[in-house]
Length: 134
Image (cartoon, rainbow, N blue to C red; front, top):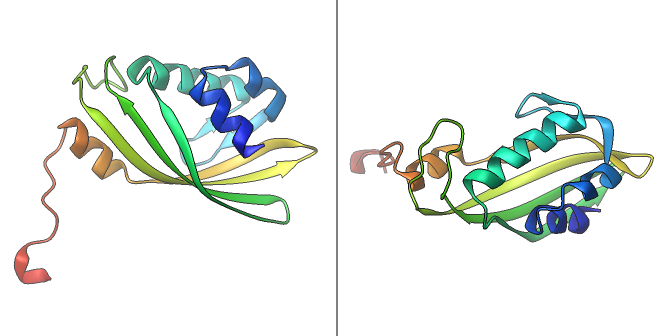
């Protein structure tokens, strides 16, 4: 299922999400409720990063939960969440935690490095900790 989900994103095949996700799917981190809300978010992400590529790096499954470590790459060629086009390439590392019931994703949480994401786009300047704090 996780591989099919990544494939759906990589091929921009949102119709496949209907097969993989429950209609009342909840994404807790982004505070999205319902499959249509998730599809709208993905559509906006793909408009901002039309060459989106999801690479699965690790998968751990136990019980009804799946933990997936992914790398997302793309080029910011369209507006995204109020950020005007920068033309910059990004690489974002994420961990997705999904709960599956009756053969469908029903809820998820994500751990994303959004500070690094915004830094790569040039939206913020983040230098890390001062030398004396090392």
